[in-house]
Length: 240
Picture 1 (tube, rainbow, N blue to C red):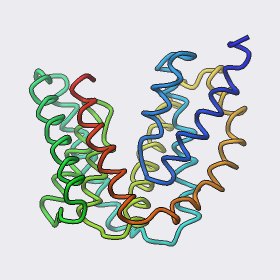
Picture 2 (tube, helix red, strand yellow):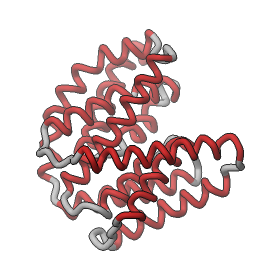
Picture 3 (cartoon, rainbow, N blue to C red):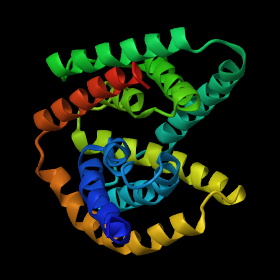
Picture 4 (cartoon, rainbow, N blue to C red):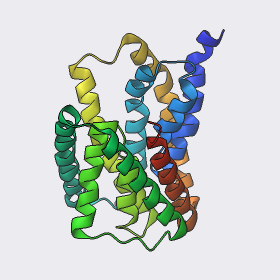
């Protein structure tokens, strides 16, 4: 009975978790994994997640004011790519535990600072690019970049829609590359493809209408929710 209902349960859970992501710019996949690993393997869910993540990015950007400057986004992605290459170099050559705990501590402290002083963090030039690089490095080493990228964006832009849209564009680009890798390596199995076909239309409709909730959230609430997600992301790295 549960097995028969599993695709419907997955669709319902993803509607809720990715509606949260389209409003605040992150955390949909983390919340989805925490619930649905009772029904599906973590690997299946991680591969499946490219569909809702790409829908979130595409719909969120299509239904928002044009706040993303391609030049700035390209710079973020370029430094993240450099960080990713360096992260892979470290992955195969150095013990990662010390770096893991330093990164977890830094993310947690940044999140706590954002919670207590949500508009006081200001990043410019070198510090911003350093965080872009660190986001790519962390993605390569531990599969997590959201808390770092959002800390960088919160410290760079004042407007919540600009912050969210850059986050959606940044993660959309990463997920396009991830999807290309999956297709090249035949990673999307018939089971995952079936889940995508079944859930995709419902997710697309739900996210299309959920996007308007972002514009009903005030700036203070947006920054506080994202800051707490960054804190939780940092703490979770201690146990990752």
